[in-house]
Length: 77
Image (tube, rainbow, N blue to C red):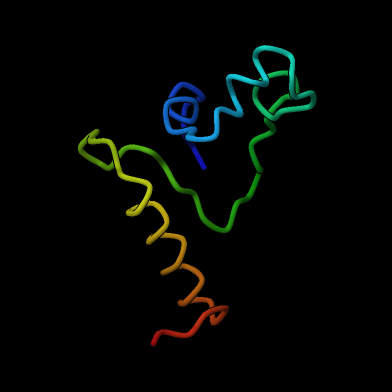
C-alpha cells in the first residue's frame, strides 16, 4: 500500500492512529514504529489513480481481489 499516513489517519474509523499519537498504543506502524516499504512487492496499491484522483477503499480492495483471483488464490463466483 502506497498511501500517505495522512490519508490512513483520515480513513481510520476506530481512531487507532489518534490513540497511537496519544501514546495509548505502542509499536504502531508509521507512528512510533517505522514503515519499511517492501523491496519487491507482488502488488502495489496506491491511493491515487493515474489522473491523480483519490481512489475509494472499495476500488483499492477490488485491485487486491483481482490480483488474488489471477494468481489462483481465490476463485470467482
